[in-house]
Amino acid sequence: MSPADASPAFTSGAAGPAADFAVRLPSDRSTAAAARRLLRMRFSHVMAEDTMDDLLVVVSELVANAVLHGSGEIDLRVAFDGTRVTGDVADEGRGFAPPRRKLAADPIGANGLYLVERIASCWGVGDDSAQVWFEIPDRRLC
Image 1: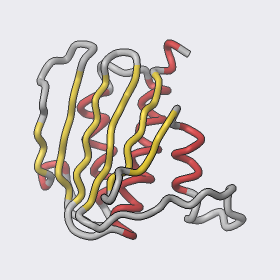
Image 2 (image 1 turned 135 degrees about the vertical axis):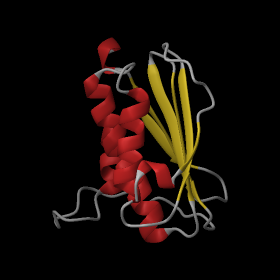
Image 3 (image 1 turned 180 degrees about the vertical axis):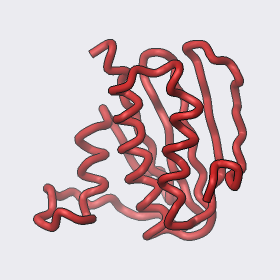
Image 4 (image 1 turned 120 degrees about the horizontal axis):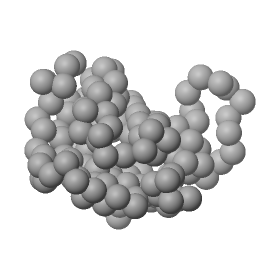
């Protein structure tokens, strides 16, 4: 999938410190990579590189989980106000309860929400929905 295949909706076209982004993505194994490309294009000029790296890991994990465990198209929303990144990933599924566990012994897969928990300052699951929200502080301020 290329970024052109997504349905972007830039809710704010400003390149200043406040920047919002929303996109609907197909449920496809290439969707996490497309989400990373779209986010880098939208935020690389306003966000510290370390913060961008954190955002890309969190979004990659959440989008990959939506593709693997969810159903239907995937909505990705991200906002950056110059001090923190907030966002959510939602699919058309019925929702889930997030597992609480430590890093799995298997180095491939099964650690996505563990990584989200380690990187995000806070995160959670929407009530009765397949939505996961997150917040990441801008590393320049930490």
